[in-house]
Length: 378
Image (cartoon, rainbow, N blue to C red; front, side):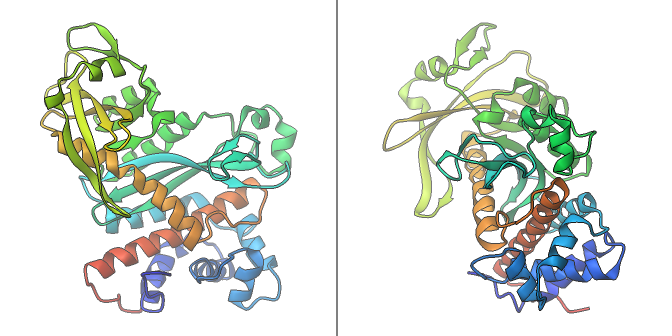
């Protein structure tokens, strides 16, 4: 770890393990799950089956593979425990839920859901699996709280191929947007505090997801295309870029979207009201972010409290980058992408444990920043 004393926080890891321990029917997989978590945060350059087994004192990776593939434990219940753990320590009514996906490079054609699209992870067309994730971000920290493996139609249309990868027959094709809605519903139904939901253009273009969030009265800020049609306050329609281009120069304010690696992330920001018949206390805006150096403009559709200020919208827009940090931290520090499994269940098992390890580190960082002592060992 770079900024967390792992030894000092073993007690916190014990508390997290105790929280999920009841999801394991037998003591052996329960014990091995803790070994797996310890291995994931060990600081080794590689965190595959062999290195995790060596960290646990095993002579082969068979036990770790058994934990992922066959051991009797409730993977989805552990996911829920991880979400509750993150919400308990990092949750905030002003916090942000963020949706995004990331690729996992894989060789061959047998790994569940593997396809050959353009991979942002690799920067080229490459074999990969794609996971859709939900993250929680607040002033206390950020962590991943849900995940789903994307299955292209080429997989769900071939049930024999699905069965060979351990994918249950009841699993049908779902778009990434549908997966995002499922994960958001789980978090909201579980009472996760949320001030805003944000997501990039790939998800922001879904008007059905926007409407769904409005029906649940959840504020959102979603990226959209420059040519997205907006309903204006005069009941007309206009492209997003046309509405922003019509704004006077005085409408733009230079604001920070939050701290970055090289200081405040400053941009020019402007907004214009859109839509008609606002609900009491709620408003709709088209938000624009213009680069100070290049002049490039990004566009966002927003729904939230009527009294929301431009500086508040800039803060929420900046929060979306937290999920990119989650991916980078979880891949670099807890082996999110270093699994050596092909089947459906094992993918979910590894990703869930890697999320648990990352959540522990995020909570440890938060507690360290607040100067709290390490929790007592039980």
